[in-house]
Length: 448
Image: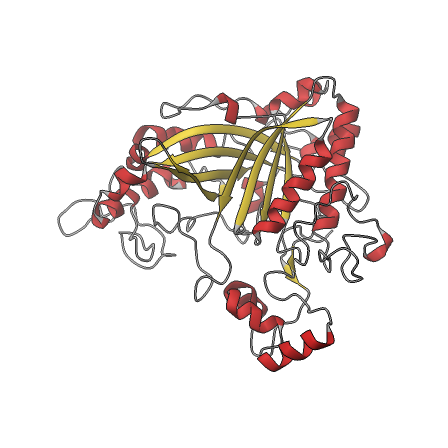
């Protein structure tokens, strides 16, 4: 199977422009120029002939749905994200859940297929209003709301997971992973149970807002009579092409966020992030979780008004990095390893004892690490005049007890940044491996 996270584009990049730069730097105006062939004359000619215009850059980029691992874990978080938890309706059993996962998988397989373009009713181009390439049917008409007509896949990924409560509702308690044990309570938690946990979890990401919303609506419609929405959270990131070159994103505090994330090139990356073939006895992960991972989801509100009252110098001490370029206060550039032992000219530690980068570092947590893939969110201004905004934190690991839990315990007690954060919702989900042609996500659990 091909890796599920390889982002591809069907249109060749123009001469002298690498595919990476095409995907990473083409903004709205640039993309428009590429679509019409790079000049107004070409655009007018194509419009006059009324010929379909090939999607380029963001629109044509796609991530394969099928693979040994689910998409939406390793690749960079897209510009738009929806996190949704569903609860099975009363009476929905294992058979009903299996049918739902099959419907969902078939729908996502169609929506992420390369060459697929939403088209207006009555047109001949595109594949989602009739028969798709390879002869497979497109989305059922009852699912297709025509929201995303004219758009390509736009790097759409949809990732499915199971909450602890799912196993009891479907009579599968004997297959419950030990790693899915409830997360411990943390002193800084202020969790809303109505926006936490859930039987099923879905993560949607895309680089176009209408494509992402369309996927959300399709899955919600497909779930009717089987599962209802428990909670939904909507997030965003920087749009591809908004910066002069690809770079690490910033969070709503203005900090470059994600520099020290584990990388697929690390020798122990797979060991830390994914359940090995055959499962893992150490973490209590059964064989059906092979190739899967565990997602910790936290809605973390940032107390931005309090944060913004700090000087930039004070903000940098709290984080342990320069705000301008993300370089550690111990010196170097953004990617320079943090020197936790360095002492400044004043005799004090360059990285303060309660600085976020020190407390969160693997060296401070017995080597514990997790892959963070977050979205920012903004849900308006509260009655007190402060923004309800922050981070939809999603962390991936092969074993939460070795990844998220020890790090969060350390942050909970000694992180200077914690004074400016409030953890308001939480969930832990078992995300199984991917599926092949004709299969659906979770099939080894539900039919094994």
